[in-house]
Length: 168
Length: 134
Image 1 (tube, rainbow over the protein chains, first blue to last red):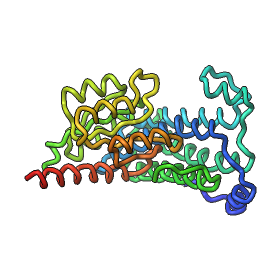
Image 2: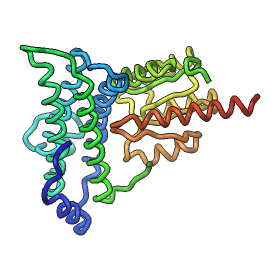
Image 3: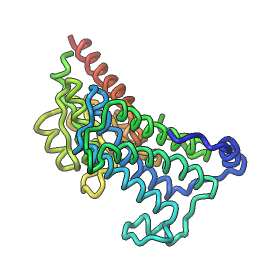
Image 4: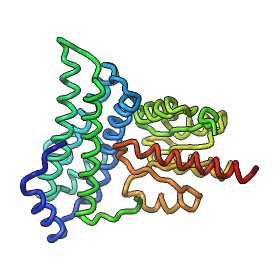
């Protein structure tokens, strides 16, 4: 899991006190794309970890693909002005010049970025072309911890920005 | 109830979510099927008549979305347990699903085994109904 930022409490307090919000369009992108990719990594990992089995190389490669898609989406959300993408929502982001507040940017990059990076490192280690091997159960546990903390971050951010909660 | 007698349909347009969710359910002893779009979901539903359906509200570019699938399933048999997979921005959809009798929701991203508790709750409801029907 990503280590807490030293100024984390101050950042969340600032979000609450200054009523900093996340544009609905970005929430939608976060839940549409990140939600699917994080869910896919979770379900692949869970389908082996739950039964005490190593993740075979073929499915470890799928996890790597999903982390790549998360990285792409994070890059697009944070730096949409730099990219060319035909997807309608990204176009909308660009056209409206929709940006995340710098405070949310910092939290978003730290938590999602570091956890995805961590999953990539774990998977990359086992997919090293010189010595490719399945992901053992203890590392599968680490991947699950990281998907869990990504969800926790999204929940905490939603709470801090007072995004209306309709379920739970 | 013998888990192998319970059929579960998983509907999600993200292939890995559909595939591995169905795989986990199969490993846990259920008879699970997967569909990646609305038309395929309804086809499997007609053929297999699952007692439980996990349905993603958003089925990408599918002409039949998750709510269409839910409406058709509930119109066929209102006792089929449907668990909707949603996002936080789905307020209106959730309200309609509730009216159609949906009791359980899963909020993406899925990030733990908690979703299996919702499946178990649906199984308990089916068992409860079976017991009360004698």
